[in-house]
Length: 514
Image 1 (cartoon, helix red, strand yellow):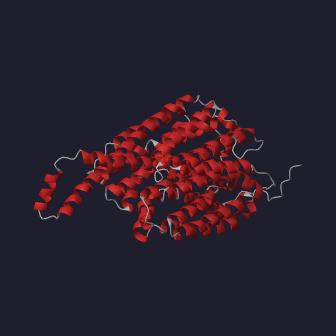
Image 2 (cartoon, one colour):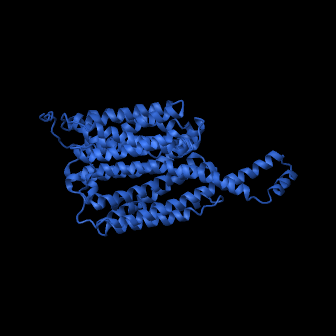
Image 3 (tube, helix red, strand yellow):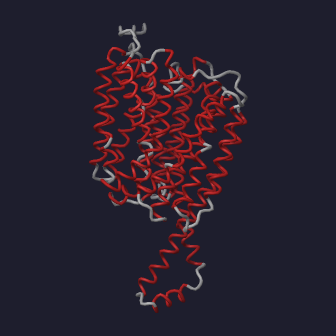
């Protein structure tokens, strides 16, 4: 069958003046909104869990469901843009994102909330690459670097403001407000982008899609994440459901690999893994970003459940990593073109590992400043890790493979964050339970302490509650330090992995990475 001919489309005429500025800001806001939603819920998990009468471990599903759905929809972006046009897909995704945000805020139970978060992630996934695509389409070539910089700035600022905004909204208006805030912005942005950029629509063609590959991708990724999210509650592989999900994920992944490697037009072109630099770089990114995202989820949980912080103050602490990352990003960008990127990535990850070790020595009497200072120090290593690694990975593939490599790298990064979130919260909860049992068994002088408290006028039940609270607090603190120690080791492994990549022989074409 002869391939369908592309439908005629309006030629791209770069915008100027006010329309260019407004369009650039709108596209940047869209990217900001989607990235914001990956972190805005981090500090809200205890509030959501309390409001819906579930455990904090179950509340984390709000984060993982969004990330997994977003990862699955990213490979679809290229086909959707070719089939329907980048502007139409962008506007439709923006409207869908806003509607799903409204539904998330109205959700009466955790199950319904997770369903709408999945839908929100499916609509949000295409918005990130399409916002960059359209920025580079409407900006003239001489301003391409400015367009890319605008997109990158919003990607950096959103994770900083996410915890702060999420905490303030939760404390003042309730957890539902972290979703409601998206609605007017998304709908207004969609309407204005459509009115301004209809003339910038990309050419369309009736292209086929790898339906089998997409189905297999959704099958094994979904089974894996559900297994990780439900494993703790179902006693892991003692449950037939968890065993079935594990086998589905394993077999689905194997069949997915075979299909994608033999399919003529795969949904995900896995052949780029033949490049050693790409494989080593993506492995480094997955390990490092997974550990980093796990820390970002763990910190607000610890502060709110163990240290008595409100969601707002937990957000202020969590944002410190992003503040120092933004400050050091220009330095990392300038060094990336002068120094072997493997060395920069290694130094960045080594610095993060060192500061994570320092954080694993936390005590229950630490002040806000003492905790924030460590996160601020840790953030300086993030740009040294991310920016050179992006260039190294994309420089390891051929120019024609750059866009596919960028999409696959984005998928691996998002999936590693979702998987790490489930594993970190599960290990944290298990360690806290085990520590509680060990501390209770090793407790000395408890009766004397209870007698002393009773003599001071406290009821026996109250005295017992005071001791139980101390044991519980120390159990959670120890669990937090243990997980941080394990994540520090993971950062070290990631730092060592980068040396498996050869030194890049050329610079990556970052304008084609979208």
